[in-house]
Amino acid sequence: MRGWIVVSIVAVLAAMVFSCSPAPRVTLDTERVTPVQLVRDVQLNHTKKTSLRATGSISIESRDFSNSGNFTMSLKHPDSLLVRIRGPFGINVGTVFLSQNDFMFYNGMANEAIVGETQSDILQAFLRMDMGVNDIMDLFLGSSRALFDERRRPDEYTIDGDKYLLIFRSRDSIRRYWIDPYYKAISRVVYSSDDDRPLMEERYDRFTETNGMVMARSIRVISHQERSSFSVSYNRIDLNASDLSFAYSIPSNAKIIEWTEQ
Image 1 (tube, rainbow, N blue to C red):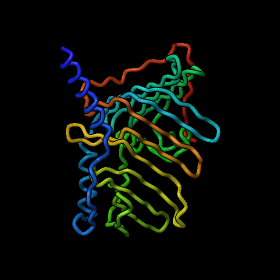
Image 2 (image 1 turned 135 degrees about the vertical axis):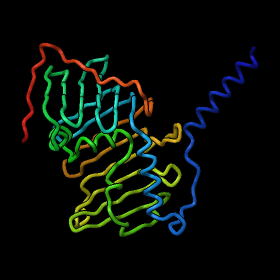
Image 3 (image 1 turned 45 degrees about the horizontal axis):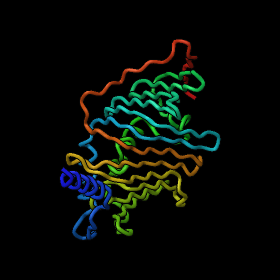
């Protein structure tokens, strides 16, 4: 019996070490791996992920607001997103529901709910970041669709450390994308002005692979202009779950605020 216990402990420790071990080193070669092929592989992984059920921690920081807590999430891309956030001692911090048509932000501390039709300035107002509904859903799925919207080859394609780097320039902006060569996933994005001042940055880290799908367990968005940031750290993920629920309720005595376009 004691022998079986020892074997079990060793097996558990080995699994923990394996799950936390870094990805194998990959020899980067911009001649062998073309930018078209690289982007296609990244996009293929992203499009495999259609839904997500997850738990973790979330934090938002800006010049005049900061908060953090644990969350549970249901996401069906690109239709609906429901996030419930709880603070210390299980306090209901808030609930967020987003769809392509409408939204609801419930502030549990103030007992008020903001509701309205989905518009492009909603997340700008609450997160101090220029992001739309599709952007935030892609973000929670651990990737950025911006790379797939680039309609031409990069102006520069090179190697930066242990990552591939693609740089796109236009008249009013510069976009840089770092690609992890092993997971074939975006690890960092920096959007800059035409004079190369950083405006917004996305970071993806702690990649894991499940059923052929790569997922970042650590996600952070930084708005350099607004001096704000938004971070997510997953501790449990269930990709392509089929039994998601988007039902939510708010207290009957909550103050309801109708959102109008600013």
